[in-house]
Length: 442
Ligand SMILES: Cc1ncc(COP(=O)(O)O)c(C=O)c1O
Image: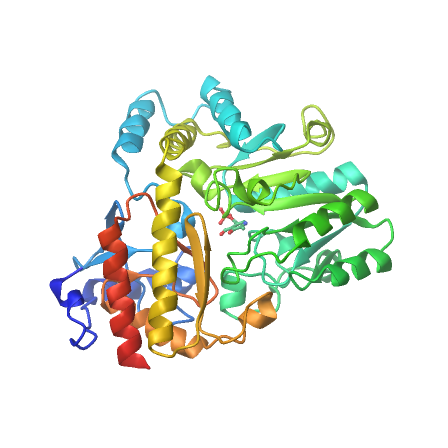
C-alpha cells in the first residue's frame, strides 16, 4: 500500500499491468478465457486478470511488481496468509521423502484424527483432491445408501462442477448468469431439484411432490458462492428435522466454511449434526486436498467395505496431507482463530460505517474469517435478493480498489477472506482505500 492511500484527497490511482496484459494475451491461446478456472478471467468485472508472481502473508505481487493486499486468499484457502514459514518448512521437509506413493501413510490418519477433533460428525472420512470430487462422491454415496435418486440443492449454492450439481449453481455459474451448464443431460438435471435458500416451505413442497425419492439435501450452510448469505432463524435445524423425518441425508458442504467460519464449521456454530460433510480449501492449506465423510454406517458403504465406488491416484497425497496437518496445527493455536475473526469484524464494520457516511446502500456480513458485501438496500436472504445488488457499481468499486492495491474477488457474487497475516494496519489501509473509492465514485 503506498503512502498515497493515506491521503483521502488523492484521486483514485491507476496501476500499470502491462506484463499481466501480455501474459493474458498468450494465455488465451492456451486456455479457454486464458484461465484454468472461470472466475479468474475477470469476465464479470472486465479488464485484465492480475497475473500473480508470488504471495507472502496478506499480500500478493503481480508480474509488473505491483503489490496487493489480498482478500481472496486463494478463494479462502490461505487462512494463515500466503506461504506461512512454518507450513513451508514442514512441507519442504516432507517432500524430501517423496511426492506421491499411492499407498497409505500414517500422516493421513493423523490428519483424519485432527479433522474429526474439530468435526465430530465426520466419524469416518475419505480424502480426495478437490471440493468437486468430495461433493460428487457424497451425492453418489447418499444415493447408494438411501436407494433413492433425487437430490435437493439451493439456488446460487455451488458445490463444484459435478454434472448433477451444476443446476442453478453459484460461483462462476452465477457470475456469468448461466442458467445451467451445457453438456449436463436433462436426465441428470431432472434428478436435481432446487429451492430458494432460506425457504423451508419450498423444500417441504419438494418432499411432498417427490415422496420417497429424495436421497439428500446438499447446501452451503452459510453461502459464499452467491456472495455471503446467512441461514435465517431455524432454517438449518428445520432442514435437519425434515431430513430425519423423510429418511433423506443432510449434507453440509463446508468446503468454504469449514475451519473458516469457526474451527468446527457452521455445524459447530449452529449446533447441527449433518449426516455427511464435505471439506476443502483450508483443510489442505493451499494444496489439493478435500474431504468427505460423516456417519460411519453410511461411510461403511464406500469401497472396499461397501458397494459405492470412489477412488483417486493422488487421494491423500503426502505433500498435501503435510500441508493440511501443519496448517490446522497453527490455526488451532490459542488466539489465532479469534484474531482472524476480529480482523474480519473490523473490516466489515468499517465498510458498513464508510458506506453509511457516503450514503451508499450496503449490506455486509461476516463470520470467522469470511465476509461478503452487496451494494443493495434490502437484506439478502437468497440468490434472487443477491441479484438485485448493483453489480455495475460493484465493478467500478472493484477496479478502483484494485488500482489502490486491494485485491477483492472479481465478482459481486463471491465471498471475501481475511487471514491470520492481516494486521490491524492492513485493515485500516483497506478501509482508507474503500473510503476514498466510495468518495470518488458516489
Ligand atoms: C462450497 C463449495 N463447494 C465445492 C467447491 C468446489 O471445490 P473445488 O473448487 O476444490 O473443486 C467450492 C469451490 O469454491 C465451494 O466453495
